[in-house]
Length: 157
Ligand SMILES: CC(C)(COP(=O)(O)OP(=O)(O)OC[C@H]1O[C@@H](n2cnc3c(N)ncnc32)[C@H](O)[C@@H]1OP(=O)(O)O)[C@@H](O)C(=O)NCCC(=O)NCCS
Image 1 (cartoon, rainbow, N blue to C red):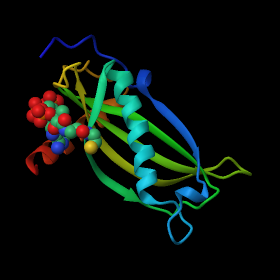
Image 2 (image 1 turned 90 degrees about the vertical axis):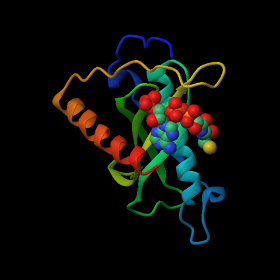
Image 3 (image 1 turned 120 degrees about the vertical axis):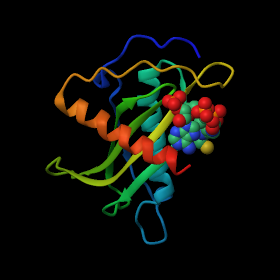
Image 4 (image 1 turned 45 degrees about the vertical axis):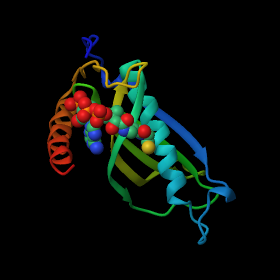
């Protein structure tokens, strides 16, 4: 594996995406189809991962997916992704989905997940990722918690 580039702040790779839930995104009850939401989460998380790595990053795992509140047709959905921790060739990205109320702009948390992406080189082999520069106490807490989740994730593979 090649030597990783210099560490990067999680703020460099933070990603936000906004989508409008249309009829073609609905389930039989008129809510958003979960698979569509997961696809949007995958894209948002992958963009954050690739901004951090500077390479293509493939999805290796998606865990702790929680659908906390329904999302309806017509809702404006805001997805946000941030890198919690970088390991050797993989990184953990936290993705959150909120619904934004039109009148107030208030955002309601609806779905969240922890995703693992692996940086790959041109041949598709895992490539070293830049470390994560933890600049705040919150950054450090996220790294510790991500490490614990990684240990659990890899042990249960
Ligand atoms: C992810 C993938 C590149 C890993 O390749 P591999 O040959 O298994 O590589 P390794 O065993 O050396 O693991 C590479 C890294 O991936 C991590 N990894 C592999 N499988 C994982 C899993 N299920 N969950 C979390 N991390 C995983 C390893 O922990 C390692 O991380 P590290 O370098 O930071 O320690 C490979 O399994 C793959 O291509 N999977 C399909 C990815 C894909 O197509 N995604 C699109 C959605 S279907």
